[in-house]
Length: 318
Image (cartoon, rainbow, N blue to C red; front, top):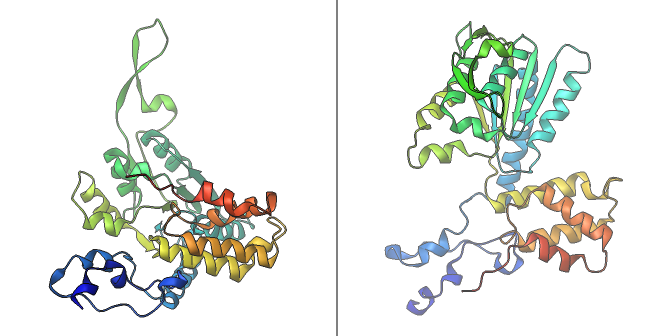
């Protein structure tokens, strides 16, 4: 028995995605031994069925919340989860359906958004019935000015007044002197009343962030979460994401659609590759499945070799 405890592999938590490691989870090793490291390899302790059930339920909730946002019943929503799991797709699909009658004005912005640009977007979509979606614009969560503006926009008080009073110095020409401009010169008021709604789609796990070391913006994040509905999709770890990929691709025949054109056998091959290598794939997602499907379609005889080259993280020699 003492000899077995020196073998961490025997104490790894069971892994239903890996046929070689299926089985019941081992009992905890005594006295906090070195095997504790092996026992904590999988941070997500849910079982397969629980993961799929919980995430499916949350995607149903996401659709309901999107409808509430569009109808003005909810002022704001933050949706958090691993990249490429279908958050944006689900929201866009719902918004497309809800904007068909023209009663909702919807705008999505993605990527880096400066404070002044965020202020401009909030002003442009300030009216009731306007929905502004910030997709993967995570930089706004780490900037004090942006967070203060967001706190005003998402506040629970009846009248939400957003203000941005500042002067900046900009270089107006290569050989000209520096000149001052005020926000008014950009056609924006120094303050306005905001009656629109906002959705934020992010990969940041705010629960984990707030449980970690305190930072300069931690109080702002706390205040932001108190002002909005925060939906954690419970998909932050590779194992849970891999299970969700299986569920989505298999259940919706995603890779057998005309867009991807794989046979059922080829689709199963893609899933088998992800299942076997999910621990070595950098941030597995539905995009991973689509990318491998492209390799299968373009190189049906040697796609596995190409997938290993492009999807699996190389092992660094010690």
